[in-house]
Length: 126
Image 1 (spheres, rainbow, N blue to C red):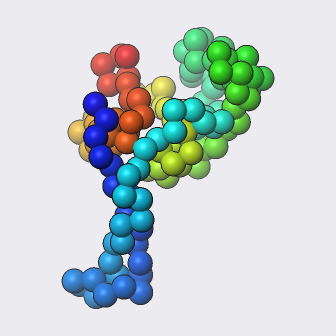
Image 2: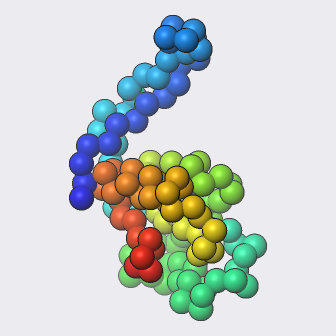
């Protein structure tokens, strides 16, 4: 359920409690765009993908999805960075391999995504 997500940026010159900078509120209402032109997925692992995902990526690169958006890949192999970009710009971030740790990777990022009005799924095969 969408709520209120806040975005903070580290100001390294700021005077934090431990002297190491401080976080400044820079996005008082963080909302993920409903659509975006990017997908974030490790293309090198394409042979491991389910057939439906292969078909979607093939079509998305060509603008053959219902939105007619031509998607392009943006993947840096850093889970938090990929999700952060998706929250700010919209699009799709995923990992079809089952190696994400539910407790401290998948569930917390899914919660942030849902609060920022993005969709999340796959925790129970959705």
